[in-house]
Image (cartoon, rainbow, N blue to C red; front, side):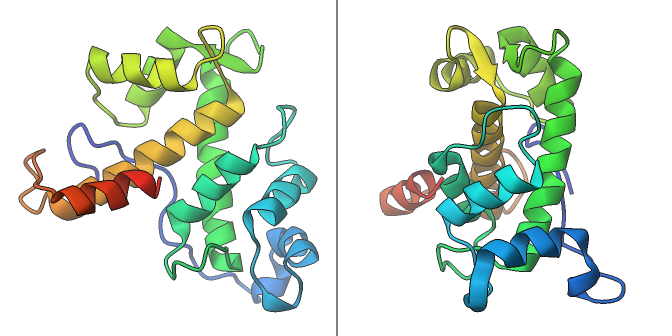
Amino acid sequence: MAYPGYGAGYGGAPGGVPGGVQQDPLYGYFSAIAGQDGQISPDELQRCLTQSGMSGSYQPFSLDTCRLMINMLDRDMSGTMGFQEFKELCQVLNGWKTTFMSFDRDRSGAVEGQELQQAITTMGYNLSPQAMNCIMKRYSVNNRIPFDEFVSCCVRLRALTDQFRRRDTSQTGNASFQYDDFIQVTMSV
């Protein structure tokens, strides 16, 4: 459920795979990297996303962005990602990539501030100009946001929004945090 101003996000609970996991086209990329443990680490995720073409014609994802992506979906807090988490990540990434491409009108591989704001609004977030200014300062390179940084921004927005929603039990846009809880939430994304 999307709350006003919170953003709708992409992806949901992964569905079943008809015919089993091994028939899923993503499984080949995943299993080639995961090895015997059936999990992938941030550096393995980076290789997997590059080999699968998920970054498209853009630069490969940075190791920091890969860590963020794992943390976003790491339900068992292992620091690694299993296949179902990887599959969900691919769904989310495809949504973000589509959004990014629709606002990167000049196909430069980066969006500008106004385009970023439109993209974030399209995803259901209602952020103040001050919040958008903070995002631009954090993610822009020469006032342009490349795809890797766009994904990093989307991961953080989604993770922070999910954490906020858990604490905003009355769905009013207000939540109370203890200092230690705040540090845990912000340092994990």
